[in-house]
Amino acid sequence: MLGKSLILAIMLLSPPSGYAQQEDDNSFGGWHFVEIAHRFGDSKVTGMLYFEHENYQYKRLDCWYLRPGVRYNVLSWLKLGLSYDYLKVPDTYGHRLVPEVTGTLKEGRLSASLRFRYLHTWKPELHTQDDELRTRLLVSYKIPSLKLIPYVATETFTWGNEWRRTRNYAACAYDVTNYMQAETFYMLTFTKKETQYILGFGMNFTI
View 1 (tube, rainbow, N blue to C red):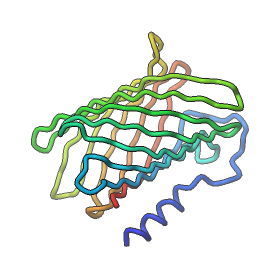
View 2: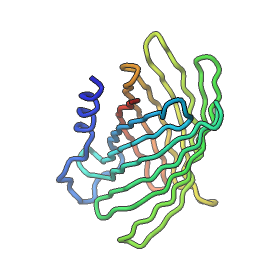
View 3: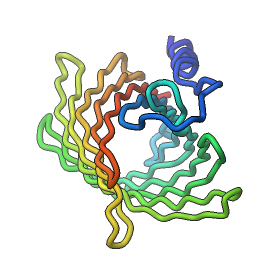
View 4: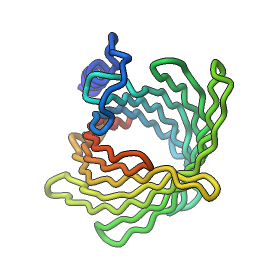
């Protein structure tokens, strides 16, 4: 059951070919993802593989990327992570190194987490490099009887004194089984040039 669901999710979320490359409206888009996680025995280490596909108007590719990585639970409330992205945009490709640290506080069914994520991106064909700090605050509430975890989040992108964008999420996760979770979100993004409205859907698997 898990294997069939995983194959179906990957097929549905794989980037379609034939996207038009013309300039188009960037105000609305759809993002889709699959994450597969595996905890190594009784250790504090979890391996993960994440794939995300982003498009505008469901017509034009923004980017897709594949992210393998590891997470380490230092303490019950503190987690470290390190991952690598292979990034594909319409006209070129790139690489990203992504270290992060996440702190989480829980009180009953209520949970709040603060994540600091640093990204170093380089694109060999364009001979460009970029640095960015992403700070995300996420607050969730678990409803066991409905198997739902609604949450809200805000994430700010900066580097030095430069503000680049802020993303605001209203979302909900649903525990399909003990090993499979569906997640959907609405995201409002503010940038210097425009406001973007994104609908997202993804699947999380624990194997």
